[in-house]
Length: 430
Image (cartoon, rainbow, N blue to C red):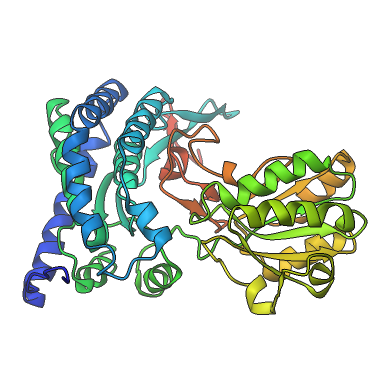
């Protein structure tokens, strides 16, 4: 049975609703910018407690979403991202507590100086203002986004996909109840209830109210947002992540890293999509790691040299090396040396996450300097490129841009700064 779809309201009603949401968010942002860190933390801790206490309510709402997932055409990887288990809800609550424990970036003095004429110059952290967060499948990021926006003093408009509407509504209600008890501005966290695509189009034009848009989902969504938005966009298009096993690598360590990077959760943006192996160790390493990968259900697509060493491998095309599979599929290439590995990453990579496995620290340093990605790891799985794993508490997403933020976007990346200058009757030019 296909999922029931409610009739869409007239376009003018959608536009009016979006304007109302944006105006209220702007007013809430002005109020939240002056709220002290203690009250914001109180709201986050109350919300974390409520999430755990009302886990069953959230899981029941999520079951309604999961029941219609196949009819909506979701893949297995998308369904995995959609699913909320008690453990994932507890992890989301733990993330809120971690965000509460982090230093407040608002009002933080980032640098100070005293000019020769006695003027005191301070660079002070301030919120961005109003955030628009557009995301697919993952209802757990509703919690992350709300926590980070409140702590960084920003109001946020949450626009999840229709596939997660029931869970997002339940989570939003719980969060708002907690924030209300902490006397935070009522409209600081709002849910865009309309699932009509027109709502996104309207909001992307409201740069008078919205300061930054963050899309998190498939490439088509992100490209649409980047093309239509009249405000800055914080984004990444793909996560074509590489692991390069260099000739000096400890092969046991390399195998653990490769298996984790590909198999631990293949449907996420920091999963490995391409394995590069230096040819000096390929005859020894590739057959063993290929056998381990195939035991875990991974389909291998390799260069001609890989196919000769591992006959079960499907011949790879250039398109395979340019593909973010988000599944148990892996491309493999044998490279002559580190320089060829770096060149391959430059040609086929997405600037997201790349790793080297090596015992040669000189090679590691050259690799980290040469690879132009948001995160470059040495002897660690690409799966560690994540806000929580890197100590940010949570993240709004991972950016492969270079302005204004790169990598996991946590509290600091959701703020800007202003200069606060103290004088004593100073005037210029006399």
